[in-house]
Image (cartoon, rainbow, N blue to C red):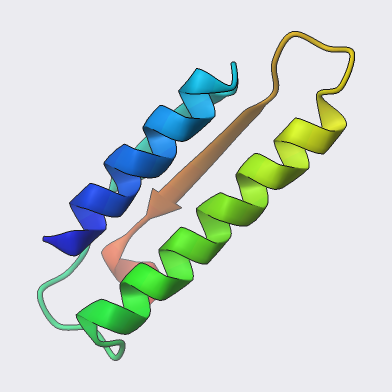
Length: 75
């Protein structure tokens, strides 16, 4: 699934910048979003979170963000 690739790439990017990441994804089989739309939304959320952590973390060792995707959130 493309979402796994996005989560892996963005997690690696964040960790490479010293940002601690916790990702738990439980994506239901049936969504109102297409796979492409879901990937776009998640990629944008992670990009923005990394950018905020990068800016907020100047002068600090690291920041933390988490993303939790639950089936109930997608219904």
